[in-house]
Figure 1: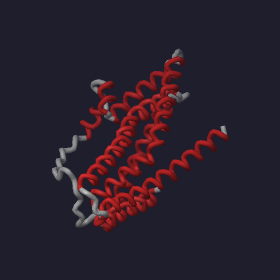
Figure 2: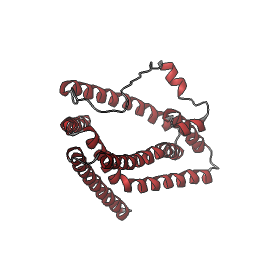
Figure 3: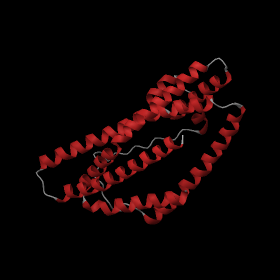
Figure 4: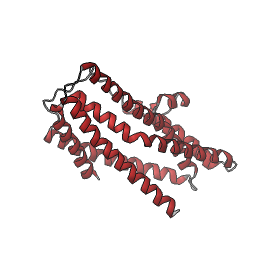
Length: 242
C-alpha cells in the first residue's frame, strides 16, 4: 500500500511539473505569436490548431465530470455502515458549504474591488452580448433538485439532480443486503472512470500549453500584465481562503 501511494505521489508530482512547464512554454509561444510579424494565414492556422488542442482537453474533462460525481457518490453512500450518519454528514456538509462559500465570496469581492484586475482592458471576445436571467426562488431551487427524468439529468449535466439521484441509489444499496454484485459493479465502474481520468491527465500539459498560447496570442501583449495581475490575485485569494 505504501509503495502504491508513494508511486501515486511521484506521478502527480511529475504531472504537476509538466503542467507548469506547459504553462510557461504557452506564455512564451503566445508572446512570440503576438509580437513576431507572421503572415496572417500562418498565424491564423497556428491559433486554430492551438484552439483545437485546448478544446480537446476541456471537452474530455467536461466529459468525465458527471460520471465521476455520480459513481463516487453512489459508492460513498452505499458503503456507509450506518445510514443514519448520512443525515449528520449531509447537514454538516451543507453548513460547511454555506460558511466556506460566504467567506470565499466576501474575500474575493473585497480584494477584486480593491485591486480591480483588468480595469480598462478591452478583451477581444467573439460576442459582446451578455444576457442575465432572473434567478429562481429558493423554493424553485429545492424543487428543481428532484429530476423529472434522472437519465436526462445525467445527459444534460444537471449536477444537483445528479447528486440527488446518486444519493438515492447509494442509500438504497446501503439498506439492501443482497446487493453485493451491484455494489461491486458500481465500485468497479468507478475505478474505470478514475483510470480514464488518469489517461486524460496525460494530455493536461499539452492542453494547458494550447489554452495559454491561444490566450496570449489573441489578446496581445497589452493584456499580459493584467492577466498576470489577475492570476496572482486569484492565487493570493485562494491562499487567504485556505
